[in-house]
Length: 636
Image (cartoon, rainbow, N blue to C red; front, side):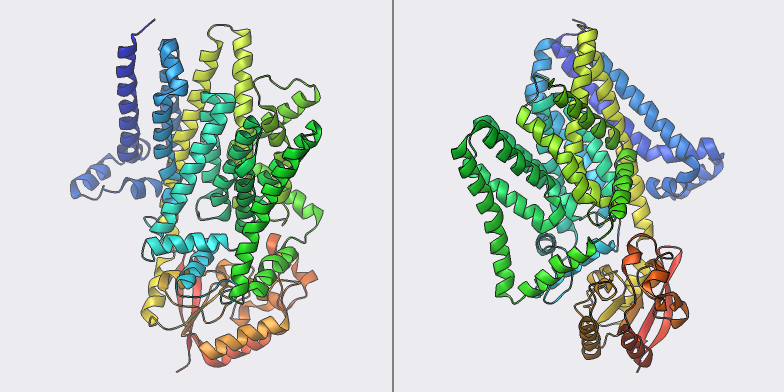
């Protein structure tokens, strides 16, 4: 043995401290060193340092990121190479007794906690109050709806939106515990993501051992950063924990040969996913289908009946409770109209559109890293199933479930024909499973060929790759942190506050409900954004008239036209609205993607006439560096 166990413990602590110090130094002085070496500004650097202006490494560095990208890549590669060397050395030195403890005991728990602390906070930095003064479109709607809930409003009845209700009440809870700030919502995001990481890691480690679990976890987190940041607070983000919980209770039930109360919980979890977003039930559907198939195959009729009843009661029962609440508030008809009728219209697209969305989604997760490994692992699993060579170490019920879940998740995410990146967050748990599976197979294959050291060699290599991914993810998160901070529309928010009183209404023409949320200025209408009034197949003259009646009664003090940053929304300025008078068939070539589902109904002319008669443009405010929003004020 190269080192004694005591010496090795000391080396592990020193190595961990050195790596943390190195990361800190890279973050603190790396930007200045890059500036010094690559742009020859040593004098300027010293002047900044002496004058006290070199105090914000993030801003100083990321403002010049385009010109220093290769330098950053070099730092990441060098640091990752060092981690690979350290991993190799430790892999050769760790005695068998400590290996066992590392795989199953306190060291694994400590490592898992360190992993969570190191890579959960960074991905969520870009969506915290540290970085943004506004919010993205989806997040803005959720936060505004939550704000109105705390003021006594009921979703759907008082504020229009087509998402199921759970996301609003998660946001309302966050605002409530943090006195109306987003820190409470951010903390809930942190808790959900941390729990999803730890539970997923536990599932992968139990099935595929430590190193594959580490690699799979870092890869799906890297993909999460790419797909869900900036923005955050997406329904898919909260569903990650539900997906892992469904897998966990399925595994536990199959191991025990009994579902009992776990069937009820699986049903409730499925209902929660459905009430976050209906097409997030992929893993729940796979759990249910595999459960039914296994019971029929084994002719275990008692478990089939008991488990099916438990899942059905959990799913339907929770759904009925939620629907009952909205019925009691006189909002059930509105919920059905907005969540089901509108969304059914929303997903009525061609097969070509769904195929295009699937290709886009596959490209996105592939660019994020986990697409290659997850898909390759799934294809390998399909081949092993056909050849009847499923690894003996694999838990077959979970293996079957994971095989089935991939096409289900693929289909559900692409139902709408849209390819918004956050839609594909739902793929991450199952792709992570197949990444861990592929890693485990590779380790076993290398060990079979290179007996003795094969497992250590492959484990060290995969650990190094995972470490490199984690470092790269941290850098990407910091880049997003800075970019979101600079692109937040703080100017328009301050402008709206300065021109209105707290009890004034502000109509945001477009889909930027975050303006209403941040300024605490209520929308004069339930249509806080106007997509439903422009959507082909859903809009009616009655809905347009309702919108017009509400803004006539409540008379917003300001109208902020955000159409310059949203091609779906027609501008209020007639000079820029010509293309909106064209028939849908003529406009479809001009409006790519989701824009082709929207048009200007004839009844909207009454809205434009009312605004033209009662409002005048008073200012143009710059937002997001390159765009301006027009501001209209009520005539005296």
